[in-house]
Amino acid sequence: MTLTGQSTSQQAASDDSGNYSFKDVIPGTFKITISAPAFADQTFSGILASGQNYIVPPITLLLATVNTTVVVEPTAVVAERQIKAEEQQRVLGVVPNFYVTYVSNAAPLNSRQKFELSWRDAIDPVTFILIGATAGIQQATDNFAGYGQGAQGYGKRYGASYADFATGTLFGSVIFPAILKQDPRYFYKSTGSTRARILYAIANAVICKGDNGHWQANYSSILGNLASGGMSNLYYPPQNQRGAALTFEVAGVGIAATAADNIIQQFVVPKLTPKSHKHEAPQRVPNGR
Image (spheres, rainbow, N blue to C red):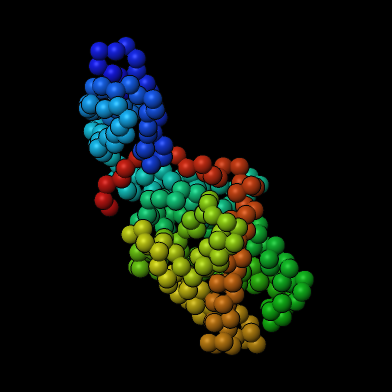
């Protein structure tokens, strides 16, 4: 602020609400110049009488006229770049962690990209190793005894475990998400209290973000678990095939496991994933799909 006919001037910074004030101003004509980065300066003048408190009317700043280049990319291009980053996410640098995004406004995936992400997860060498370990534990505990023991029994358990994983991923992360326009990924929540983040993680076992960006019931995951449970009746030993009971049992276990995994994703996995994008970078503005 400058005073007409005087050499004195004052400066003040506004608070978060845009409020500012000047003290001990000498009476007379004054001029206020308001400036902010990327905005054109605005000026306001008036006359201040002795002992008067003067409230300056609201002033709207206009964007400065500068040469600005805005890069607009198709949504599919933005999503593809984000997928490539997700495919670098590995717990302890080893275990794939592809179905988590640390970008809160991540671009929605098209059907091809949903398949691409699931295929990348399904053929990862570590996936085969983990399934092999699962089959080994089942054999050691004689789970699904109808498969028998020895190499043949282990092979059947391995095939069944991989089939459970493959069908669950195919139906829950590709087919139903493509049909219902839902995102199969878990959106990491970086803010809020511990309690709020735990509830968020549990809720995400039954809700998801739609391709339209809105939260909705996670029909894709629920139907995917049911479909996987139904398919398991085709290859589980006869004594373990319980029709609808087995289907809903497998589906229920899948939902519970998802909730537990989400909690681990919130509080443990980011610390163990070297290439997780914990700090989100500004995204280029995508156009419509």
